[in-house]
Image (tube, rainbow, N blue to C red; front, side, top):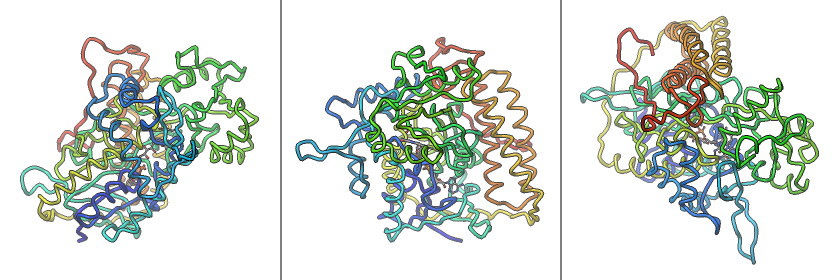
Length: 534
Ligand code: FAD
Ligand code: SIN
């Protein structure tokens, strides 16, 4: 059985940062579902929010974050993220990441962008492909480190628990290898950095790896998960979309882009004083409303007010992608539609990344650290990932000194079943069904009727999927389907529990905030009933 000191599940910004920071203190294995760079991180466009501008202050960034979070942010977590941001940006630069800059009296100054909900320009970026720059450099640094091994095309299936000492402790994970074998990896500490779950929805901006595996594995293991009703919908993705919608960065609106109806009306001022730069939940709901009112499938984003050369220089990626779809954004309005984008809830952690299961940590989008509350402020997620992965790495190093080798738990039986073509049809069909249900019934605007319907239907599919898992040999497709089914269930359950509208959760049955009691997080923990399958 393979043994390592530190097992990292996921090779996005959070996993790679923690791997690099722990690597001088023990052996590190990073496992990742596809090739090493494939992650949400890789597709980030806008950038990383950080207080660097002369007009800006930590307190303003803290206030903007808390305002967006609609009463559910943990102020201490927000303070840590905001105040430590500039230092983490310097660290990323030391690792070799280059951000866009300009010269001021021969002095190199980082260029700062503006996005919705921010009262100042504070987004550090690399043109409109920040994520690609960050991801490729971090992977390179990990590949160069003698103590880090990256295992591509290896999917974590479940966490490995040892109950020998009374309380359950995470001692690694079961991995589906590139060859399709189920293998245990024993680790003194395990870090979940599996990113988000946008793929639970039919229309979303996430790559296909984002199937909520970390949330599902942690929940099955008995960890606390919270605030899963707060799925953030990005207001502007290119219409028509595919399995992974192409994002039109909020930075385009920060650069002067204007949302328009098909008749040309710039409608956002009717919805919010900040107009096109209102917080994301408000913009997404306004677009949804305009589309429903007019029976149209999209609205437009107009950036033709800026000089063509400026647009091409600031947004080379968006410009060339749209051109490949026959839209010249310097001359034409861009058809856009909202899509699921970011999970604000996740596996509950403290500010050092520790979950409710000893030996198990979580950082990045999979975690619920209290930073984002009911709605994440744009470009705060890459910031949260680097700051909290740094904190978690510090805790992991301390714990590695204190913990002994884990005891080997039992190895699972692998059911010897034949995997037929017919079953592959079931997997792809069920995946589509759940994602469509989630889009139609658990989207931007919700109601109890639709949520109850979604619950009944997803329950049915989930039970059939669990049955299939008992009979069929595990494949990555089946692992993902089981996780999509479980995460969809948990999102619906959380949404039904919240009998108010707050942040990203808007329901027509309870259209206002519940001001009769203090705001509360929705926390779910798996009940250990023999008959229960969830
Ligand atoms: P990810 O980067 O998603 O990495 C997750 C990793 O886990 C992947 O390597 C994946 O393969 C692996 N994995 C998943 N499941 C398993 C499994 N079962 N076994 C093994 N490996 C597994 N945020 C910002 O702050 N600024 C932006 O400008 C911005 N733009 C964005 C644009 C787009 C199109 C998208 C999709 C997101 C954007 N975000 C942005 C959000 C941000 O990119 C993510 O929240 C962040 O990158 C998450 O990082 P992470 O390390 O937690 O996860
Ligand atoms: C964007 O560029 O609009 C995405 C920013 C984010 O999700 O934080």
